[in-house]
Image (cartoon, rainbow, N blue to C red; front, side):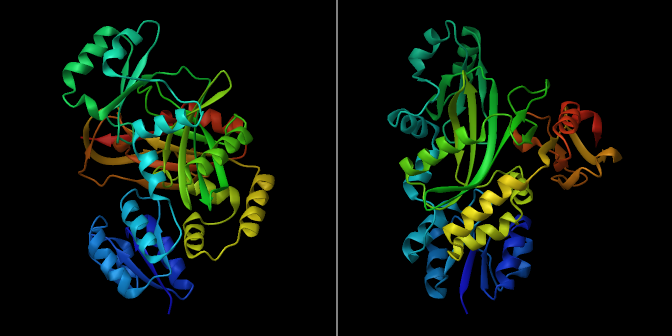
Length: 390
């Protein structure tokens, strides 16, 4: 019996595990949380941290899997790369992973290859660069908007320097005033882009730095984004695997802000599933197994683009204040629009005011019949729910 390894065995991985089992595969799940759903349904459960590369490699060499699957989670990506390298399986390129995972290295790569990128300033240049410009400071290896600081004055810059003892772990770059801010996912197979979805960010006055929703499709030109990413994955030799991306548009020029070597944590892959008519968890398994050809990928890709007539959004439900979670009330008028509502809090959990993506209380994946309907709901989204706290 052919075997497949899953790195991380949480609820989001369960659909892929069940699909692999239905295909007659023996599934080995690795995760250090014995209570995770994937452990209960996999053929073999290994209660091992996905960062323990040596132990997982030792077991994998013994079982000889024909595929290694990472889905959505950022945990275990490097372990997956090492397993595939040593087992001769295709996947994400190691150098590409390191390049996109460090903001400084990533910005240098874009500049080297003539691809638009925000200008990065050394600490000693940053103060003088404030003349006529706004800046933004970001942790080199950060994510989820955690630790991001918007700097619009010399006072704010000096405050950042005083309050940040490890400034070498940050990059300081120009803040780009934009006409569009884009977010999306795609699948890359042998350095070719498939199943790309591009959406527009929505921001709330409560937090102008962290988006609370993404609306699909974007009003910006899909094919311009596709051309950029198609060139990028070849130049970086991305390999095979999911990819989440973020762009800013100024004067009709695309600036690539971020690439993540995984699907978005905000369930954008669910929108991909709706648009292209497949389950993304299953598609990731098929691609990992190398059982789907480029011709079929291309055919499915074109079918989804031509035949989808709906509008979609992923939207975060958040709190403006800290507290202890009691529950959430969602207006019944949203019921016909919600495809999936995921709650990240249980009663009694601590809730933090919405400052980063990690502060979300719940997330809704929604489908609409028109852009007008979607815009109406998203522009006043906070009116449609209430977070109950004590």
